[in-house]
Length: 508
Image (cartoon, rainbow, N blue to C red; front, side):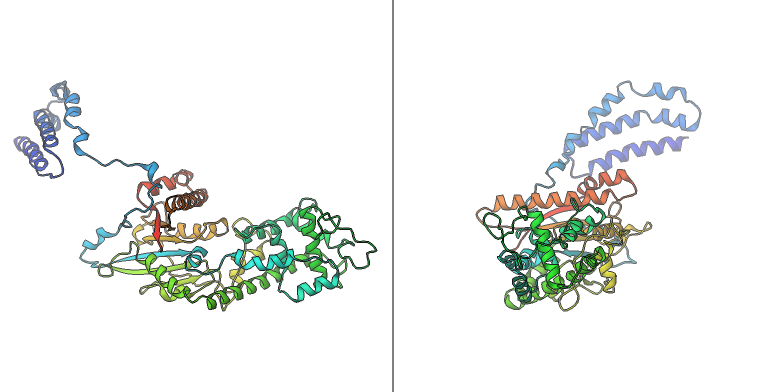
């Protein structure tokens, strides 16, 4: 009993001693903590008797009636001077001077693990090649092709035969010319719209069935017409006044020009789907040839690529002296020059997920919601990757497991990717693999930092656009999580833990 009392007395004294040695608290905080220790000392005897089982009744009556007030006064949190946290401003920092959080630093102290592994995954989109000076936009590729279509002024069979012989236009060129603009060519989104319209077999509302019906029209070419009636302003035949009808008739003229003997009976839905698949391959090869020429004609591309690779890799990278560092790259581009300029370490890999120049490259739609649609499946990226033999993606990420979440990839960096829906399936697989909600994986999203006279406005616009895309991505991913509450809370959790960063990267 006496030993218990003496022990508790020593605890109260020790409390004063420890508090007095905490350097970050000022003198008022130390005094307040000492007052708490005095209060603790005054109730030592009642606590001792209660623990010994000799007197429970006097325990509550032995506490000073003003204990609650004293504790409140004694513990004045303002003396601690804790920093404010502004969640609302998390996306407002233009160019934060930050270090990517090192969540594995605690393991360096373990003698059995003198060096820990640290892995980053870098995800590249077309914005990377654009920043390096390559004319790699779909718009750059399609602009001259669309100009050929817009310049067609004759609707004789001979004129159309000449146009198609002198160009490598495909069925998809006609489809896309009427539905996308040069500024933002959502090729895969338009492909998806057309392919999925197969399910709606009403020719008045379905793109697929409307175009198929137009092939059977008898007034597509002017050959044999005794009188040609033009729409006001020319360039279109009468009866093709609206854009939709004109598109369907152009598609029909293309189909009949390359298949002059095609009968109405042969023009089946299966025939049209087969033609769409064939011409998709032709379009991919034409785009690959365009990119190869752009690289050959751009003497500065390789140097710019090397510099930007180094900036992305080194930003927040851990020291090779303290860690086994590896860098893996998942590129959605078809160029592979960057592979030569990433220091991947011993275990890193570089993957062109949609193929690369010199090999087969693929366009396609997201298969997430249509893998049970037999018409759509051959146009999905998943199926087309499988036909090509797949991609060697092993080593892209370190996966988390329930026993050790520290195994997950430390940082995932995004540069130049639009974060569009067509690639959500890839991101879902990556986020699932690292257990994004429970692990300590950090997401870093970059935008090119402008330094012109209008830099503030330009950078604000870029950051805001990127933030919206990030929000859409994380909301969509959250909806796939088994725990719906975790899904709704995901972005908030990442922000609170410092695991979601928008970063302006100087590139001049």
